[in-house]
Image 1: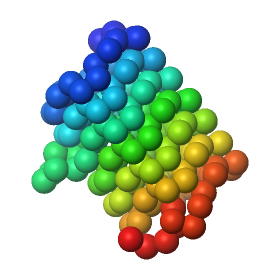
Image 2: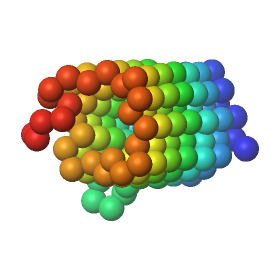
Image 3: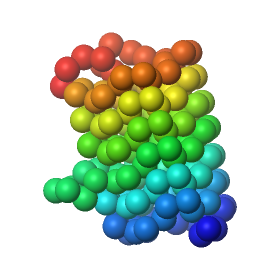
Image 4: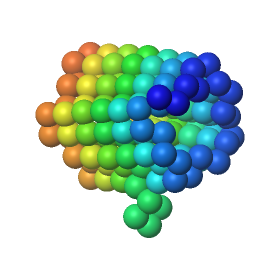
Length: 142
């Protein structure tokens, strides 16, 4: 397993990196580019992804299935089109995140801050939203 625990990876270009099962807990990934990166099964508990870009770029879809984002700071992160099936976001700050067209089926969004997040065309089947904090912009079409 690759260990990046507590690493400062802010503003790094990690496009198309193979980081499945990696330990990125408490790492700083602010402003990092993770387009097309495979993070399947990675542990990102407590990480900071403020302004990070995980956008689907012409088939370079970030693979984030079953990733642990528990208590992470993800403000303004771009997850558009990303595979986030069964991801754990419990207690995460998702303010102003872009989840447009993302697959969040079965994800845990319990106790998250979703103010200003874009969930337009996102797959929300089976998502746990218990205690999540929304505003009207979160659920309106954009």
